[in-house]
Image (cartoon, rainbow, N blue to C red; front, side, top):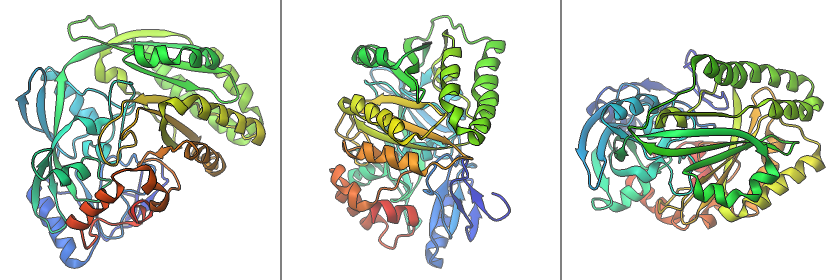
Length: 437
């Protein structure tokens, strides 16, 4: 909060709520929602503020779950791992070390870990790996506070319609208070990062996507150069060999954050030099290999402010989409210093998941916060839409309910559950009116 105004991390969204609440128990959360409903006020929850969209914005009551955190219970699950019930406000960077101490780990994670657990699953946060789904695929049960303040639980067997909607609910169904996740036995990962050519990477794409547990790459626009990341899962007793403090500081702080901020400031003033900058930056990359706890490998620090849009496209459409983006750069002479991030995910059955029913490739484009993103994002969005791409719910896009409905088989079922559990639209806001109608 800045005075009476809330801003998200990227400062691409803001709100001036009537009231800001920080309940510390489920009972307090329930009372806050019930009170708001009787006052005719909208309610939205905010986690880490890492959605680039105004998904959490409200003129009514904004609720932070930062005081509703921690692990409530751990129940062993067959054949391995456990069912872990955690409070919804728990930040991922707090949850992961606690799971490790219990001999457990999340099956997959994204590349940042500052989000709240509920915020991450409600917007469709995902990592990479063709055999693995997004974070919401790990959910086995939810506790949800509904629009009248009542508290209910749901799973595949109990209130299944509520479960199907709320496990990736965009904040439209209710406020999640507890989440039961299937966590697996802890594992380490070997990370191999190396520069390569885009043409070579695309030529062996299927081999890497199918043969590497967690594969992704970053393409430097206006060049044929990429940085590839191949993360391989290893037994928990594998000796770790983490990045040294000096190398970690140089790579992850000095180069990826401090120097990258400087590069983008220069690029903002002199965009014509961006192709040369990208070429030099990509050639300066050196390979590195390390082994560490899984969650330490997944996440990276991100301190340079940017705007982001990400689209999930059918996996087989990825080469065409990248060719079209490259062609647009050539035609438009638009220059961008941020790499294009490409990741992968398995098909799932979650109603509003961007990977619902199809193996997906994710293409994320970024723009430095001091530069205008609109022309670039509009162009990439049009290219992705042409292959039935689906926008990440927590990242910038211009899609509406009218054109989203055809790409989601269960769109109308989701809206029917919303009508059932929040007929008065207590949890409504401008963003939900845009994407759900």
